[in-house]
Length: 74
Image 1: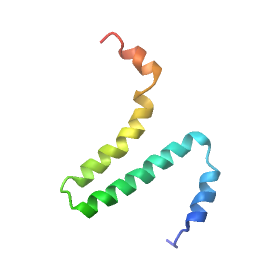
Image 2: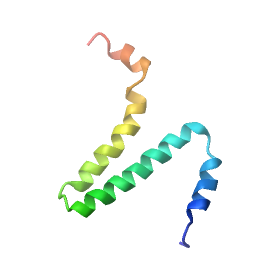
Image 3: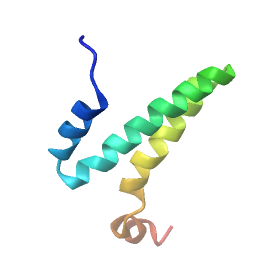
Image 4: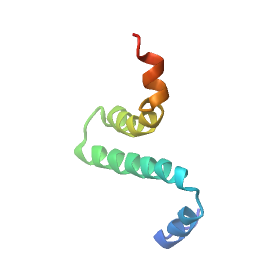
């Protein structure tokens, strides 16, 4: 795969609908967290990075009024 520049990435992101930008942000955050965890040599870094990346993605579904209403009587 040929190298990709930040300008090329930005151009592609500008073509995305606004609701997809949070997915891009979550993924970039996951990559950064994973790389940072690798630098520190934490044995559970993959699990931790996955947890951190998943939290934001799942939060979009879980932290909605419809979900609060569905689970209100538990």
